[in-house]
Image 1: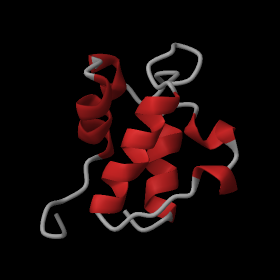
Image 2 (image 1 turned 135 degrees about the vertical axis):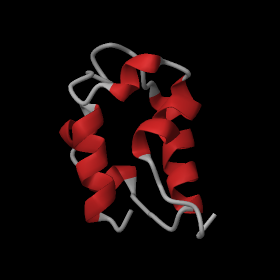
Image 3 (image 1 turned 90 degrees about the vertical axis):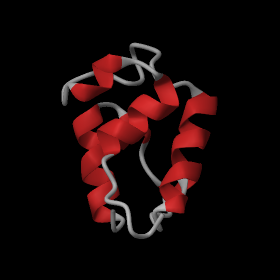
Length: 78
């Protein structure tokens, strides 16, 4: 998928099928939008774009909102 542009919101939607992911301030953890299985799918799909994030090496707070996930992905090369 190296030729496709990574859109984190679209990727989150593919994983969750929840339109709330298109709002930057959506709480992903507290709302239950992303559970542990969805997180693993998200990380796997990010790897398809060359973005390797190791969940055990990041603070869970960095995954709290859509905006924070986008920032994390940018930091790791997405």
